[in-house]
Amino acid sequence: MPVIGGGAAKAAAGQLGLRDDPYFGFNFLIEIQGLVAGGFTEVSGLEIKTDVETRREGGLNNYEHKLPGQTTFGDLVLRGGVTDLDLLWGWYQDVVAGKVTRRNGTIYLMNRAGVPTRWWNFVRAYPIAWTGPELNAGTNQVAVQALTLAHEGLVNPRGF
Image 1 (cartoon, rainbow, N blue to C red):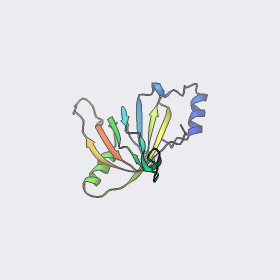
Image 2 (cartoon, rainbow, N blue to C red; image 1 turned 45 degrees about the vertical axis):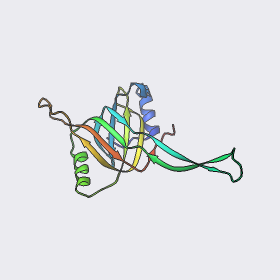
Image 3 (cartoon, helix red, strand yellow; image 1 turned 60 degrees about the vertical axis):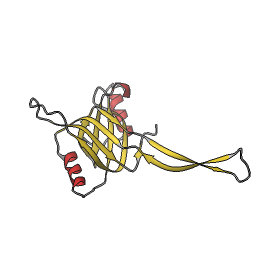
Image 4 (cartoon, helix red, strand yellow; image 1 turned 180 degrees about the horizontal axis):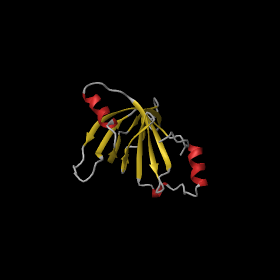
């Protein structure tokens, strides 16, 4: 899958008569370092939180200043995944062996037509948990029940 740009993807979808409607998107793709590594049915942890520190002003008991504190990012949890690559498994096995390689990536929300409607870039991520599937001999795809990524930031290039 080529790297998808905001304006170009939206223009192409408009020319094809496709709706930019994320509410009908049920599929998520994860791209790591420019390579689509798998598809997932559920993504959670797209969250950013800034702590608030309070400081009372000396001598004034009825007033306190609220100052921004540390900003943290929730772990990304991708569930119900399917992939035909060993990229995610190998990446996590490297972490287990003590070789942590941080990578940038993107999570794409696809609409019913398979066109990305929204996406979030994550930075300096590495896997911290992997849960395997229930095995089924009737399929030749490698399934991933859940993959958890720790990361150091989310960027939403579309500004919403």
